[in-house]
Length: 107
Image (cartoon, rainbow, N blue to C red):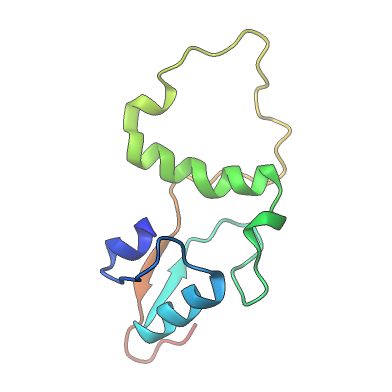
């Protein structure tokens, strides 16, 4: 929802089902850019409940870092904590964003 508000796309509900999201993006002529590699693309059958913990982390951590800034790492690391080297999907530097279509573009 935060990404929709950033580009001034409003929706009456608190949550937006993926099919509705696709309709909103089409209606307002926007597309998703920088979607994390390794995370299933949003389509009509997309179900966030089917994502792995790693895929959810990849979608949320960049957004949390952007919103929380230096507070994101405020807690000290727990001794023996995993170094995250076993994650399958690499964490992107920034979260995905919504971009308006330009003349002649089709995604």
